Image (cartoon, rainbow, N blue to C red; front, side, top):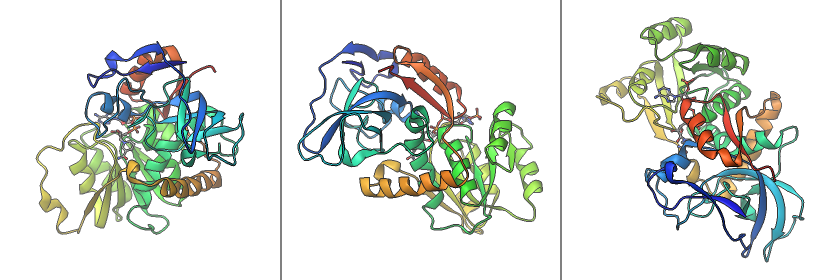
Length: 328
Ligand SMILES: NC(=O)c1ccc[n+]([C@@H]2O[C@H](COP(=O)([O-])OP(=O)(O)OC[C@H]3O[C@@H](n4cnc5c(N)ncnc54)[C@H](OP(=O)(O)O)[C@@H]3O)[C@@H](O)[C@H]2O)c1
């Protein structure tokens, strides 16, 4: 089969497309012939040694994928060759070979059905970011309906999923994007207002727009100098679910900003969930998405040979998910 191989942790620039032996299913594993895979920033982080993974080399990146069951290992029941399945977030693409390959061995516990009404590319793009968004929105316990939820990097994979799920949970979503065009799309997806974090006045405008209320929960994909600005908008007992740090470290952070409103910051780690926890969250998020007729948003689809170009698109800041079509 063909697979994109990572020989070392010197970055995605050294990925190479090669012919490798097909995987052999072990106890409890299924061989999935991948049709669509999706890219995540963590693929690049892993390749750049910025991610806590210890794969053996050559490694195959790719955590999300949809395909056809081809073969079942010993002990697998309840599946038949030809069944379509999506990969639930797991060690696939982290510490074991991933989905940027024509075939991948997946533990059967880490496969889920394609949700009704979702296309295969949507399902390939919706799993990891959907689970991340769900964890970010629920990790503090149930928020009262009509809470004000602010999402940074709202146009990206996690951001769009967070906007869709928060809206389905009955919250009011404030979305941040540096692009006018993407801000318009975010309003169509259910955000009630958008702001450009590149505009020096954005905090003042946002405060005026939500007054006398304040933000109840912020889901932060960006970090950097934006995080203290987001904290400034929170109300009493306001919370930040820290998902990503696309803008790098937070400069000159003053912990005093947390005192008087008893602000809480907490890290999101979608990889820390067990298969059972991921599956339970998946069931619930699929139900929520269906309740508003929402489906994952596909930004673009690249052919398998064009993985480097797909990573370039991801680095530009997509609107939704960047997908790889293996054409199998
Ligand atoms: N903790 C976890 O378990 C977990 C799970 C999944 C992902 N993550 C992390 O979460 C982050 C977001 O992932 P993603 O898949 O949504 O990424 P993505 O699809 O690349 O989108 C991120 C969006 O953020 C905005 N952005 C990018 N760089 C920015 C910057 N320097 N300043 C301000 N805005 C910027 C862009 O939107 P605009 O151009 O519209 O502004 C972009 O579309 C990544 O760091 C990822 O590694 C963490």
